[in-house]
Length: 335
Length: 100
Figure 1: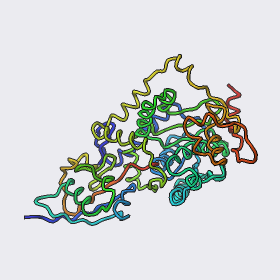
Figure 2 (figure 1 turned 180 degrees about the vertical axis):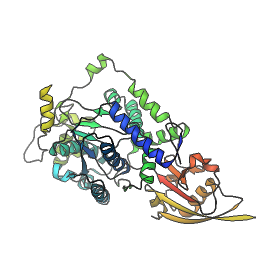
Figure 3 (figure 1 turned 180 degrees about the horizontal axis):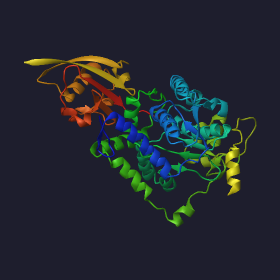
Figure 4 (figure 1 turned 120 degrees about the vertical axis):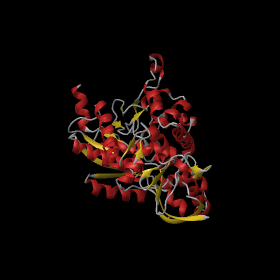
């Protein structure tokens, strides 16, 4: 028996499985998230959220005949003793769910592993590198499989936490976007969060009762102080009143940003060096990589980043040009 | 007169790391009357964790984000801390706080 945090309902194991899966089905279909025949990559880290996501996407695709071609896509950040172990979990998931798996490494794409980046920049700011690099790596991995839609395991707790962090930072543009089930600018790969209304508690219960195989070790480089604070705060709120999480998400969904503010937000453009979507002339990954290559990596973080030269001098490594998958280009041509 | 209750404890979601990497533990609680989950949490924190206790216990309860199941039943349906434990009960603690 479990008590559902969203509704307070008491349900048995089997009813829980069914309600859990069908709520996600409803979230997906209400928003018209997928198209029949679409190729979709599941961002898979081996952790609980993405493992449950792979299981549920496979289950729903079969049960409701979505007609999707599902793939597992993993990023190998190059963190010895952490990612190498979690990738073993993903490799088992590949067999368990019979889904094709693609692994793309930071080393392949950027010429740097996180282990080497931490050696160069220390433990304090390395999460910035990892986050920026992972986002692009996922898009590039998808693109290499001719996929233009990625689903991620972000759950309701994550979304509520992101809402709070965007409020604390005063980041208006992200505040609106972070609660959308599917986010996409022009020329980027779609990102969807089928778990945006799914509580972390239920994901963990589902994984436990279904005996799913997942990896649960903390990243060895991640103190993640800021997110940690927001996370603890959300968990404390949930303990007082479980519906708080969904309430925060609904509130953010109802925020309307006035046109004046909208116009003042930075416009999206393509990175001059690698063609990836960016709000500046150079994308963050190119700026960070240039810093690493020149040994001035710490400068690339924070306000100083703006003064970084845009000329590539000599033989420093750059990121290959980003191309959208053909499927996507064709679809856009039709419009 | 104190009674002794034998329980089987399981850890998941990374919590086992706090308990010397032991995913399962057999625990005997000696209490006046039936032991409660509160007694069990205190016992585990006092007797079985060497360091970083605060990742498991907060005040007299588990840290928010840790799920508790008693014989596969959510502890929120069994009076949480005041829930009484019986001989042979299986209590599972699962952390939800890891990335995924």
